[in-house]
Length: 396
Image 1 (cartoon, rainbow, N blue to C red):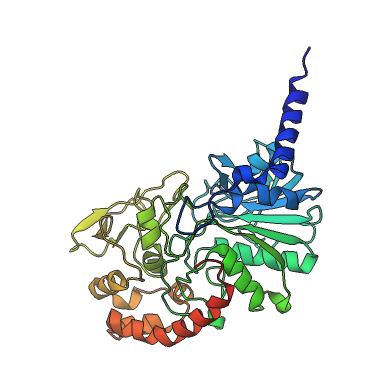
Image 2: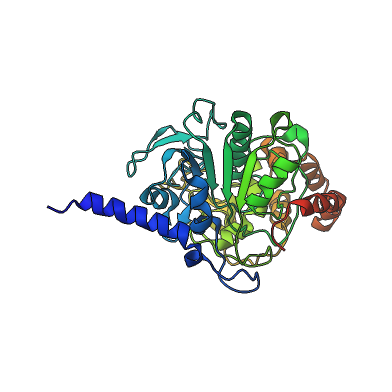
């Protein structure tokens, strides 16, 4: 009888060897003005030699794809010695709702151990990295400071630096990389939704940001992570990129991703931003705003929103699904909702300052500043940030 398993294993080993010998098979034009964007995970000719003889951990989620196949499955099929999966917010397969507790578990498809880095254990312990030589980070970012995947990147870099492990970042495009905007985070407001002195929209890929975290000494005690970036091909910061996989359950489309830096600020107010609907981050409202032209009713949606704010209550507000987005943060929705909310003293919550990165934005809105007046107060810090950022750019 023919040993089917042996034939499969030999085929996979041959494919792995072929990739190493003939890397040009996966190469694409490198002129940034031509050709399809090639993400780091698709450059197996570059990645595989760095994993030979190594025990590999992966900080990945549902966006970690090589074509239509998950990176974990791709590397496992190529006989890479995978030891452990580290999971950010929303879980390894990306089906946990925002804020939902993620527990340690096992991947039913591969049998690999999954260690959650969302909850009390945000930073890998020495024991959790003990059987790993190198960690791969491959997660789609959206370019907003409060998107927690970059906080998980920070903690993994910090753990690798302390424990002598190498980190390889497989770079992916930032869909909001075409502009830089918003107030810079103040150190006293550092949290998991803002760990670095960045503007809300920081205009870098995760690879570039990782270099900045290292270069600016933002890791604990100023340690440096042994970091390698596998950069994008055919990419510029101004090149548009439609996300092939939704980056988290409540960012279901490119329009929501574009609105996200502006709309997420509502998380620090009494306004619902559409969790519990099929259009999160595209509709906003509150049960007290009965005079507004649009209404929606949040409900629990499996895998998207569990017990969303104002569940089963009619919310009145704005429908932004057809709103044109611009290369800047829009404050007009926030200002409008504040002006129309009947009890202004209860509009903001303490969480708003953490999201904004500064207490000034709340005070400016309360004092009646226009959007243009507020933007002027950001400019000096943004100019300084752009100079600092320029040292770490990989792409034009």
